[in-house]
Length: 547
RNA sequence: GCGCCCGUAGCUCAAUUGGAUAGAGCGUUGGAUUCCGGUUCCAAAGGUUGGGGGUUCGAUUCCCUCCGGGCGUACCA
Image (cartoon, rainbow, N blue to C red; front, side, top):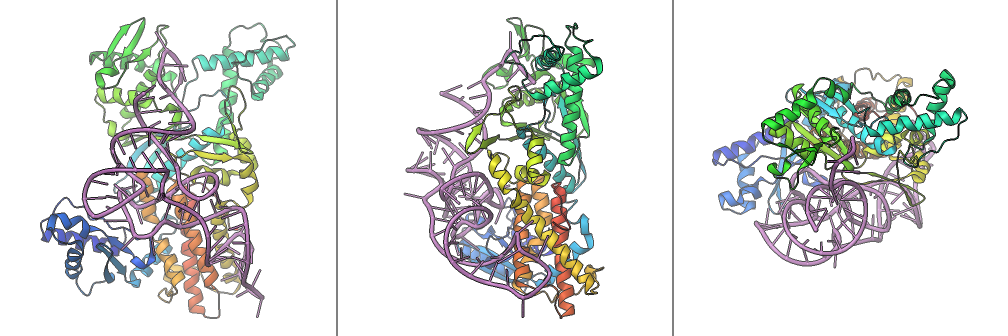
């Protein structure tokens, strides 16, 4: 929050106190249109029912309540049905512009009132194959959410939860074993429901390279499974690293069995009278908690369903003492979490700490036709393939530019052809352009080492003022994104900022014979560069010096 | 059938969480550069926000109902 905003809010609160009104929030918004000023309040319309007066009359009272001379507000107008529009003094803008130049890479960070710890779980794909484009969306989304939270002041743990036991993994091991036997020269029948991908052959090949045919009589799939798991995991980690981040921890579901936490959940739920056994299975009585049906947590085979370890895992997260716990799931897992949360709540944990983010699918199209993606059938395009085609920055940008609860339509052919005119380059270009102006400034012997000490109030052209106003939104954007956990808003902001900058650049020549003006404009574009670099940095997208 | 998400310009998507004349990109059409990077800028055309009701000063946003699409609705994860 900047000074003018704080001042206006304070005055409005004082007005409410004077009239002994409570329960009406004082909210300032930034008007959509430039002509409506810098801040706007709808409070007069909100108060109409309390004061039993016309909104415009109340607005007049409020305007009169503001002292004539104050350090921040230049002009106040009443507009439309009763909006109060505030026009701030320019001195305040220059002050805030200077703040950017002083704080540099710290600008916009640390908006959280007090430091908090957060854990965020995402990707969590079992190691049965390379990451797909679908995983890519979640990986980039999760990392960006984590990074935005870090910028706001959270200490974030990025966690990957996986299960290396169970049916899926046995099938994987068996798939490798069969390919291995094939390489050994045996005739095999490869079942349709096994993993068809070429990477299975690669793993089998490397086993053959190190062991020859020594494993051909081993019926146990374990060595094949283990080899596949470690090879695939290594691959996944490489892909993640290429995307520009890494996980702080990999949490193995198996540990929950080993330390008895799985059994403990059943016992504790039993104590609450929420567990029953019939038809050979153990049931979680969700119908007692308002759900329409009970859920099996231990199958008649004695094997738990996914719900049970999920519950134990979440209890574990709770006990680690985080302030916030974020789960990111694809839309296909939408039914998994209500039971888990219900169990947590029943066991007395504070469920409000948990935020579940569901993102919709990536529908991949090729020449207008939908491509169904399945790891098992191997008709998928891997995340690495995508990065090979369009690069890391475009990949990240593409996954981040849309709201997560909107389906992402990914036309592969289009992504390739557009990769050289992608919107991400539009933002990066602004950054590179500024750098190149700085280079010229240095050649002209202009001293730009201390832009924060520059005289700034000669920046008076509309395009300059608009740019300043856009720049100083940045801290608020970060805190809003951290609150709503929506990275696409930061993306949209940066794109808009780039637009405002390019417009400024077209109208205002930075380096001219007027030395004082040149230095002021150099300071302005330095601030622009800082904000773009900070924003892209948070999204883990490069801000290049030249392109 | 039930639950969640979505439906906005030709296409892909936004919309300050209920605000003023619903905005961008791509595509289409027409313009701008003796000068700091034209991967740029300006302009035009393009809309009954899927349909219908309701809530109120005010609805793309909230509620109801229908239509259409996606994902679930397992003793798979």
